[in-house]
Length: 293
Ligand code: SF4
Image 1 (cartoon, protein in one colour):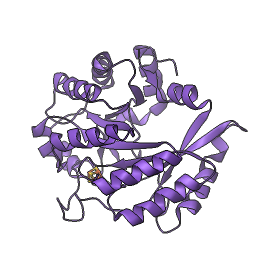
Image 2 (image 1 turned 60 degrees about the vertical axis):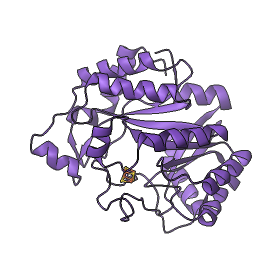
Image 3 (image 1 turned 90 degrees about the horizontal axis):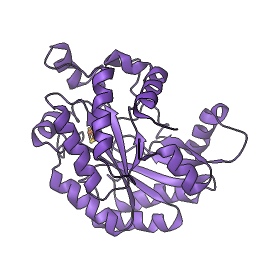
């Protein structure tokens, strides 16, 4: 692989390892509160199964999350990323957002603030706020794009357009905000060519990082109903590796690869079953894709 993994990028840039603390600001999402829909994206359960309890303060969540990962960490020489993960973490009045972002930015152990959101939830006042926080600590904005193909976007009920993505990326880049884009590989009806086109588009759009995520079918989602009715099948590890290779080939050298598979909740995973063996999958991908770290 020509590009850097997230680990390589972080250790080169910050001189230490950084660990993610998944925080929960307690927000919802326009695809769930009725603004754009009520059923959410077809694959989504809220994407926050590892995040903390939204009923407690951000500082308390940081402390709890630190304790949760403590036994996996070395003695010293590391820091943390405050990762606002579930639902849409820019979907609230700007004063409310200021309070939670600043609380994370002011915490002495936090090195980076990472905000997961949608392309259509970045109005100017929120972008300006993110810019201000970025002056205090680096901010990453993670955009869930998933696909550039309209047919797939309609199927998954994303509720935003490619023009929304372009606009969000333009606004973030003008403000020098590091941007990471989520893409799902293996969406029903998409060919390897379709997926490579999406990844190529992301690579040319001027963002700094990409998360490549294998499509997981989770119990309780509408996607599971289609899968169980036999309307589509999931990728095999062999197919997924081949598609990843093609995707990495079309990405620029300086793109940071934040993720190559993704974590699904094992208890809810219906398919593909092979993805539950994370160690085996990562070892296989490392070997086949020549990944150093
Ligand atoms: S936008 Fe994100 S949180 Fe909202 S339904 Fe879709 S995947 Fe879930």
